[in-house]
Amino acid sequence: MIEFYNVHFSISNKQIIRDASLRILKGEFVYLTGISGAGKSSILRLIYMDDLPDSGMIVVEKYSTAKIKLSEIPYLRRKLGVIFQDFKLLKDRTVFENVAFAMRVTGAKSRDIKRRVMKVLAEVNLGHMRNQFPDQLSGGEQQRVAIARAIVNNPLIILADEPTGNLDYQNSRDIMEILERINRQGTAVLMATHNREILKEFPHRSLEVKEGRVIGL
Amino acid sequence: MSVWFSIQEGLRGFSRARMASVISIISLSAALFLIAFFLIVSLNMQAWIGEFRQKIEIEVFLEPYLEDVKIRALEQEIRAFPEVNVVEIISREKAARRFQEEFGRSVFEVLEDNPLPPSLVIRLRENYRNAPAVTALSAKIGRLAEVTDVVYQRELLNIIDHYLRLIYLSILGVGLLLLLIALVLIFNTIRLTIAARRDSITIMQLVGATRGMVRRPFVIEGFLQGLISALIAVGLVYLLVHLTRYFLPVVFLRWEIPAIITALGLLMGMLSSRISVNKYL
Image 1 (cartoon, rainbow over the protein chains, first blue to last red):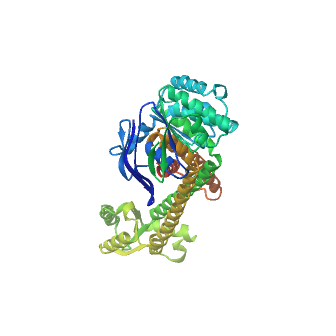
Image 2 (cartoon, each protein chain N blue to C red; image 1 turned 180 degrees about the vertical axis):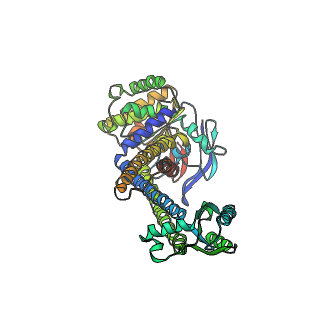
Image 3 (cartoon, helix red, strand yellow; image 1 turned 30 degrees about the vertical axis):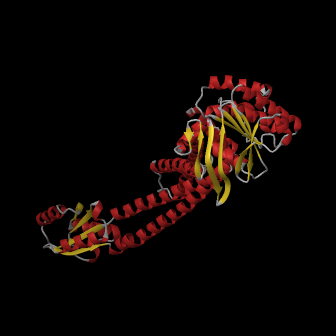
């Protein structure tokens, strides 16, 4: 479903990714490990095509960096759910509105939005907090809102960039359990992390990023 | 994404960045008011100059004892010139009456005979109310038989043609300069308000909003800012004209000026938002 073919990528002459090839299948749960600055986030950004490779090719579902038009990238992103360490929630909107936002841009009907948002909020155990604002929530709760937003459009894969990076142990475990549950329902997960405890406790296939190269473990 | 959602988003952005919106609106309404002010000044200037030009007369003095038939024939001839709008015959008797009106004494108190010659007073068509046309016409009339002298307000014409035009042009120049400064100012203010909302642009893009969808709420917001600014500016314009009339009752306002600044406000609001948000797309 996601394939990298000899991808090279650099930012202002600094080589970030060197000759990376990888493959992630439908419904897989894959870790992207490696120290900070190794290029994990860059790989995720290349997948949601916030950046395009200097050379090589990335294929995500039916979209290929070789021939995608800029105007098609939003449609690719609707098939992906992205989660960040810093949650990236809109602070002036309620929990419900933050999640609904991702559906509104797809042009969904209000009635469908309401039903679906309530459903995903229930899945992350936040139904009762739908009218709260992000600042009224704990870090773990905010990340669960972000997850709800990521899955609301039924994505093929969740891209998670250090989703537990700002959370304590218990909250990290909660997030991992939610991600695994989502994964069991058929959504692939690609998660960048350098948290060894998590890797040990929730074992899945790992890809290590080291000095811009991807090594399968 | 529905249009209604875009409108809601636009309104939301508007109330969210309240301080920035207020600053944008203040600078935009100030600029629009300035534009309106210069439009009013130049419009009134133009009307004033037009009125001045309307008063331009050429007085053609004829042989003192020319018969009425010949005077009327001459009047017909001059009236047929393309430059001429109205010709008025000032007979010798009328000239005497005018003398008395102007100087308060009858010519007959001083002299036994009326020395005043008959004359024709010519008013011009609009396109010929300028110095070169008047000079040319005067020369043409001066060559006619039975015409002894042609007189017109050379000074007044020169003032109108040179100085007033100069003043008018410099007002226009200063106005344009101020307009340019205002445009840069507004553009920067709106750009800053959008820069402050990069996070929401990023998030919109992450969840798969197309460029148009990201842009639309900002453009709607710009439209609203333009609309409010225009209303403020129009209000100020009416107030200004109303107050000025206490001192200068001739000052007038045409409906086109509020219309122009409203259109300009909407256009500037939407365009600067659009250009600014495009930088992040």
